[in-house]
Length: 262
Image 1 (cartoon, rainbow, N blue to C red):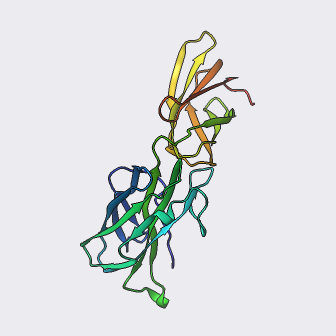
Image 2: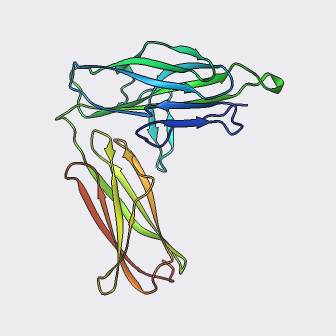
Image 3: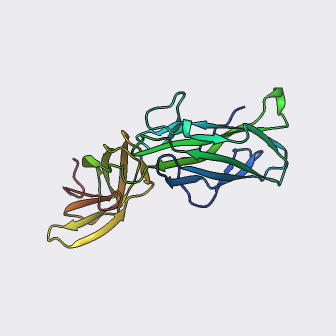
């Protein structure tokens, strides 16, 4: 019985992880480390690992490259890609044991080499095993961790494009807008935005924020869907606005009519 859980959303304080049977329950803090470091700069960090289970846990820690799929799912890579900072990160402990109710501080350091530009990312991953076993000698296992983003100041090129903004579904119950954004820059982009809907006279009907969107990695593409529930009948135009840091902003629009297929 193996259960794999990876932190796919970027929280600021702590990240609670538990397996479906609630045999393993841990808290990781911080779940994300975001830094701006010049070349030849060293940064020391620590990650708090709290064992909230009723059993002792054995943990193996490592540095892993990762990507986000188009739907936002985090995938651990077997080999680093050009955007990985795996080689910049060192951990003091490759493994540790935590008793029930105890906290363990995982310490490490990041060193940015010379001659690098843009942004890099990797993850500190924790493979967690229970010291107890279940029937058949099969234990419970969870993978989780902390995401690390490092940017080199004054070398970032932030460039986001919208490949498409369309109406994916159009009924009297809901209208689904679908957009595809692509990061053509050399660093990760934190994006936010909304879809503003106006009627045929230009009067604003509703503004819907983009949800479950935070980070698009360089060379990455993201599919984002926004739902307009219980739409007002009639002609409309939807205006998309996407912000991606500093003065970066993209605007697109699409028109339709509620109740008619696309």
